[in-house]
Amino acid sequence: MTLLEIRSVGDPVLRERAAEVSPDELRSPEFQRLIDDMIETMRAAGGAGLAANQVGERRRVAVIEVRDNPRYPYKPPIPLTVIVNPTLTPVDDETFAINEGCLSVPDLRGELPRHVSVRVDYLDRDGEAHSEVQRGLTAGTFQHEVDHLDGILFLDRVEDPTTFTTWKQFDRYHRDAFVARARALVERVGA
Image 1 (tube, rainbow, N blue to C red):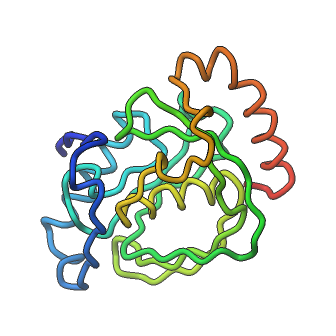
Image 2: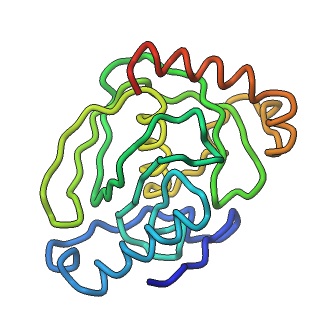
């Protein structure tokens, strides 16, 4: 496996909608290798997810996983999930203010609204169709990755620019309050 270069804000590939993946392409050894490389890159970078355009590939695929992640100790575990050609549909209008960061926007975080519950329809790496409801912080992670595939960065969704902060200042001034709100959400919705 190969660690891929993670593109950072300003790279035009991050602002383009990723192209749908055909069944033949999904089955190809090259595409399966891309998925493996994305998983390895996400893990090495300490991310909770990684979309293909973040590594310069304009394909509609992302990988998601949370397990003992020191960057996100407040997030509930998410088993390794490969989402191909995903679509999201909000289950209702309830939102939650999440303080997000991004591997493509180094050392910056900001607060933005995310839907508390979303239906995610996608193919897995074997081409099997899935339709599931994700809730809470897990729903936020899925929304973040699908945004990438649509050419949207979390920066675009921040409604109050005064919430932008570096990781160091987030840890120093904002982490405790956010973690308390996040844990309350996890307890309420189970994710």
